[in-house]
Amino acid sequence: MHLPMGANRKIPLLIISGNRDIVSMNARLARSLYRAYQGQNMNNLTLIIYPHARHELLLDTNYADVQNDILGFFNGVLNRH
Image (cartoon, rainbow, N blue to C red; front, side, top):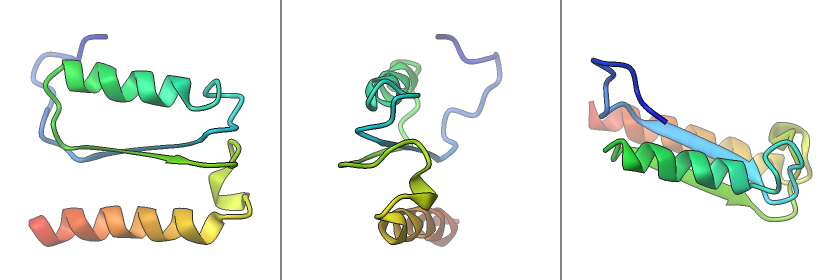
């Protein structure tokens, strides 16, 4: 995977998946994406894998945890700037 020329490698990126998400092959694709971005020297990455969660994380039984993690990510980004 290659980032376009001039891509901002410092941009914060949150990657989330459930470990029972068949779309991301039980989070394997999310982990691969995370490693690929790391390989492109992107260092402001966050990966969260939710146990027992499927693809629609905001509609799953642990949706409150997912919401809190997303809000926490955005708050952390905003507080740094």
